[in-house]
Image: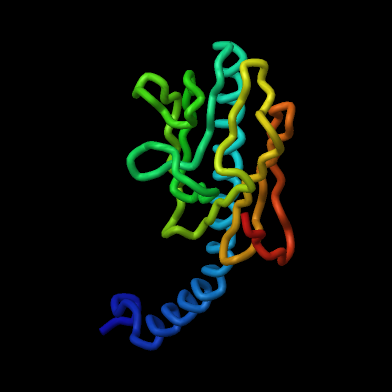
Length: 175
C-alpha cells in the first residue's frame, strides 16, 4: 500500500489526542474563571438595571416601588437571600407585597449556572419613595461565588445605585 493512501497511524492519532487533552486540561480552569466573571457581571448589571427601573417608575408614577427577593410563588421572600431572583412592583398600600399582577413591573431570575452565585443583602427589600429616594438606609447586595465576594451593588439614601467588582480573596460577608 502506498504511504499517501494509508491515512493516520495509531501512534499519530494517540499523539494528537494527547496534545488535545493537554490543551483542554490547561484551558478549562481559565474558562471556568471566565464564566464566573461573566455571571457576576450579568448579576451586577441586572440588579443595577432593575434598581434604576424601580427608581424611575417611582418618580414618574409618584408612587412607592419595591424591589425584593423573590419567593417561589412570585411574592417577596423574607430575609436577604436574593439568589432565587427578585421582584420589582408598585406598592400602593405599603404592605411590601404585590397585590395584583398588574402591580408587578418585572420578575428577574438570575442566570445562575448550577447555583454558583449567592446573592445576599443587608436589608430584606428596597423601597423607593415617590421622589426617588430609598427609604430608611443604604442597601448593599453582595454577589458571592465559592465563598468569595465577587461584587456588590450599593444603593444610597438618595436612591442611586452603584456597582463594583471585587478582586482578590475577600470572604463573602453575612447579610
